[in-house]
Length: 146
Image (cartoon, rainbow, N blue to C red; front, top):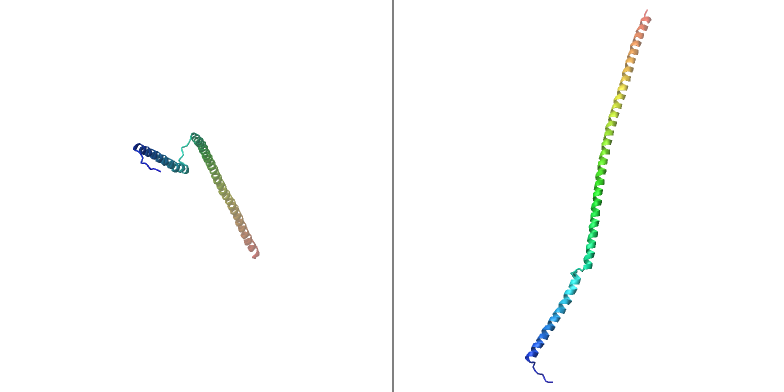
């Protein structure tokens, strides 16, 4: 086997082949490293189907958000109406309590007045009886004295 040296044009061809092979290997290595990294990190570019799906989900979520906001507003209005109704009922109850309190006080005053009047009348009657009895005792004493 005879080893002969490469000529200059052959050397340039070898260098080109070597450079191209090196570039190809570098490209393959880069693809082998970058592609799994992109897949693992989720850095894939969304395609049109994914974009439509995301847009549909976004629209659905916007509708749900609008519905919840409407529901919250309705609940707030209902709560405010219930509070107004309770305030009216409370005012009516307070008015009723005030009326009942006045009635109780009036009833007590009438009873006390009625009892006082009865007692005063009874007292006057008893005083008259006492005076009559005293007078009768005096008469009997005068009759008993000869």
